[in-house]
Length: 151
Picture 1 (cartoon, rainbow, N blue to C red):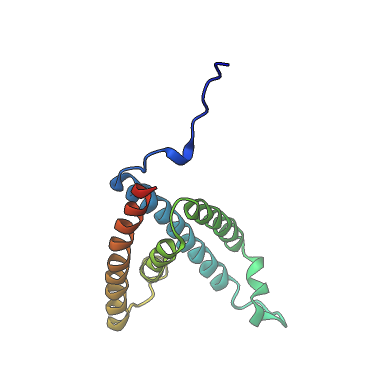
Picture 2 (cartoon, rainbow, N blue to C red):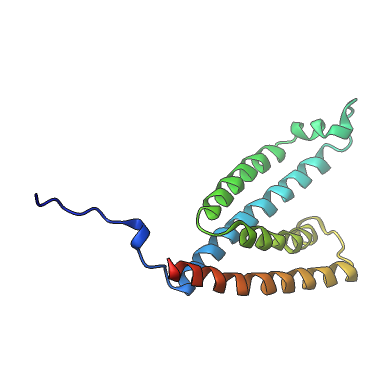
């Protein structure tokens, strides 16, 4: 009988390296931006409620009284969903290593939005984190592309 053949996703050629890298980078950047944004919302909510009296202040429950915390939680959930989507497409070790970019984004966001000081040691750490991400991600993307080509 003449039946149409179904496409076999396992035999599809791997996407070109640039395409895989751009998609992975975009997904990871979205995840990192959402995570950093949620931290900014949490900080704003914590600052807004720091003087409220509560027996359990040290647990952070007073921050829930700020409307800033609630969008922060929603953004955090969106970030986790974005990360899960990214993990379907790239290896965990690459995604996890790239998420170190948060050690760059959050201090810079704190400087911009809360006028927090960034020490020279922190700037040195930021440079090292960026170098580390570059060192880890570049060979990892080549290895992943080679593995996909062999399949």
